[in-house]
Image 1 (cartoon, rainbow, N blue to C red):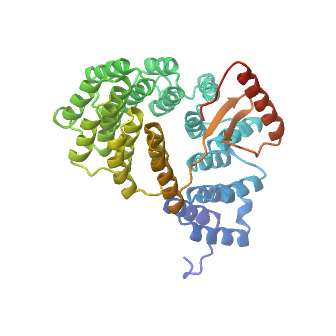
Image 2: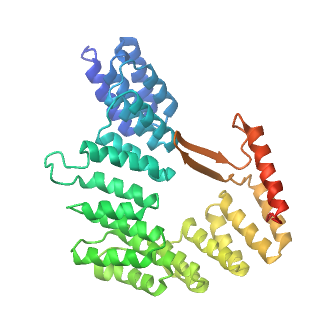
Image 3: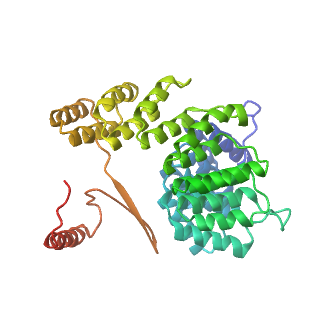
Length: 404
């Protein structure tokens, strides 16, 4: 186009930016941004939206936000782009804050907005926010198929159901599930996964049975949910049978995730020898996730001897992961092997491995607040710690002794 002497217009720029976004071509995208500024195209909201999308796909969230804030007349696409960008980058707190800003600006969300925001509610376990979004959908009829008002929009309802399941409200998830006229394999899998996460193994297996009766073929994700449910509920025999039947009866090849679920199940049940033998015998080479699962089981049951063997495997594959060192330190500490604890700490220093501080969050009316161990960033830090210390003093008065 350049060789022919044709000057690109706004439509050309938005088209090229959309391709660069898919290819995650940051440098070329930045060059097109410079061209658009030179030509005065960035004043157009369509070009700005395309730039937000490009920077977001390239994980340059600050550049995307800077473009967004310069738009005077933000449309629904502007809001959807910046909300999606933060969700894709894992900044779920900002995703919800932007959604609140969108509502405050009087812009009505559409299905794209809803689908972008719901994962943030799931990851932050922001049930109140999720319920508000679901209520908005019901009032505005957003859960229906656009072509058939009497038909459910299955992917959207799946997203709502997934949010409720991950927020621990299986009653709400079950309500959505029962009201859906059409259910796909994802619908059933979400319910199975949800019951499994809550430790309701029998309910998960019941849903799996009804799924078979409905002649819906389970996929790999379904089996991860079923095996997780067996693991959390201690249904060892049933879980092992399902692993053997996956290929022969259901035509699904077991993956490393499925073997990891069964190893976790055996480990939780205290069958550490069987779990170790399965990790060695399975047809897929064990990855750090598998060995780390077994290491956690060794810690749970205080088996330091097997942990010595397992930790060598996981550190050989992923020596920089702090969790493995922490687990081994805890195992040695419980066993009274304090010299080994010192060796672990020395190894962490040599590998320049640092323990990631614990992080917690709480949902309040005006958003989600995140805080970490020894956090000193809050403007009222002094007041917080004075109050905390006073509570600790009161606890000591009642005979509480902290576990150091």
